[in-house]
Length: 318
Image (cartoon, rainbow, N blue to C red; front, side, top):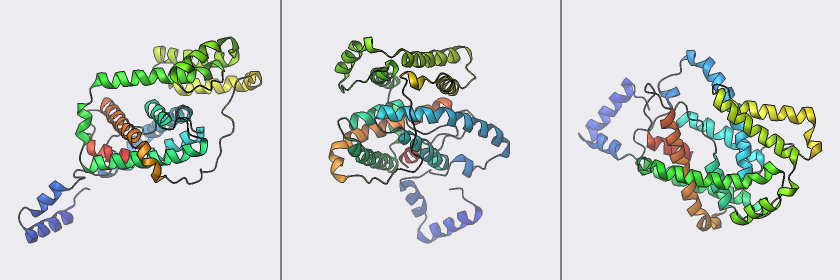
């Protein structure tokens, strides 16, 4: 909260009335000491930023939206759930986050951890699991912010994060290969899924594999030779164009289909699921915070306002 002259004078009068050190002692003990609105509101927005911000926002949205829909499939929930994770977190973080460049939405790590916590649940049960997980993760992050535990991120080594994400990457690859090959695999265990995928290769859908492999090649080539271009956006646009021109849906290539336009019905958390999900929620909270703070630090400029770890905990919680 920026302090003006009147606010400072009022604080000084209250401090004088209550004792010489009472005000500073109360502020020192306040759990969210140092919290402020995002730099856009606390330092003022410059109109020179608008054109570049609009372009950056458009490109980011075009890239993040299809990725979020893909993450929803990894988590085992309807694709429209990915759309909801794009809008609300971004708006909230823009109000209270301390990084100018961070785009807050879901990730592959969070998607696979969410799927692991809901494994074996029916479609209806997954909705309640998601609601309960969301409540637990938010509560854990909020409590960590109040207790000023932002310093924990400094003690998580890079090799641990790399190893964890490498393992997650292997799990995601095995989970997504059936979609790349056009196969329908019902196994849920890792090794059983690998065995069934290998056994199902004779039934591979070549049109599905061609468009999937072509998208991967496009992403790799653009990343290698045209780094300035939005590779995910162009790859997705190219895939849509190929589907529309050659009508590949008539040749066995499955599409997302129609996405419900209305908001989902309100699903309340179930308190009896808390004992079962609190461990997974703790892992989700830790990874969501460490991933966001690591990304914010990686892209921060020397001229940007310093990141506030405890405020990042609060922003991620909300």
